[in-house]
Amino acid sequence: MTQPGNDIRTSTRRLTLRRLMLTLAFMLTAGIAVCLAAPKWEPLKTERTDVVSVVRDSDTEIRTARGVIIVSAARPVQIKVYTILGQLVSRENLPAGTHQLAVQAHGVYIIKTADLTCKVAL
Image 1 (cartoon, helix red, strand yellow):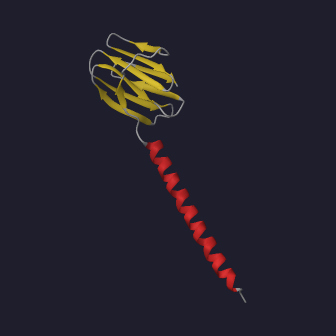
Image 2: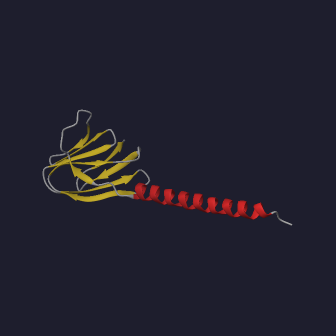
């Protein structure tokens, strides 16, 4: 035979456990959405001092800085960024000028343009 207080405690525990599970599910879903959000190229507003040149040809230069890939192009260029495992991180048609892509995860990336392909470590 159950005591009168046990049913209330059991239902309270179940409710608390359900709330906890829903909260964790929401946090996990939100975290995945943030991680999966594609990084965006944006114009470089100020020149950085920590930039390292990776590769250059007559029209395009690819540089890196802490957590950032920087592309300078004299004409519009299509650029693709892949992880070292071949997963596409970004594909964008950039206008002429200097643009940067902030990359969330540290690692090795492959950068391809029409004329250049290089490997960078961030």
